[in-house]
Image 1 (tube, rainbow, N blue to C red):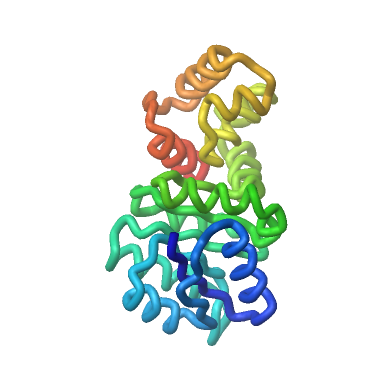
Image 2: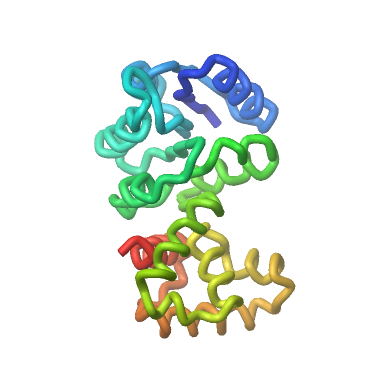
Length: 215
């Protein structure tokens, strides 16, 4: 699986290259700014792009903007953006095209190599992966602003958070030590409580939940 990396800090860039290579990926180029990242993607046509959100020259959101431009020019290109801190707007902007093959993770997740590489493979497979802390921010704001979210039980909020992260019913059941039938019941109750359309497709389910939480 061929990967192009965008990361301006030398140590992080080299560390990310090492992590990916240990995880079975092939890093075809590692770039230090958004313009070079876009050029590398157009030249190599990789299977996956992993980029920092903050890139030179202003270190604001150049990496994110490069990712969005790449998605417009190459629809469906798998992209994972990395960030030091959670920004709700980044998640909303990234998921705006509703097309899957996207991830938004905090850099601290890289330390768990197996989990990080598994998330990358989920994105390449077409899924949407959101960092638990990103989801926690969305949930917290929605809980204050939306009565329906505020009235959910602790278990329902837990299941909703896992749904927003892109977890399947089987994964949620195993993690919470519940039967899959019980999880299906929880998700059904959540759809009713939030007025969401039932959808068995995991990616569309993530989008529906995140759109609701981002209102």
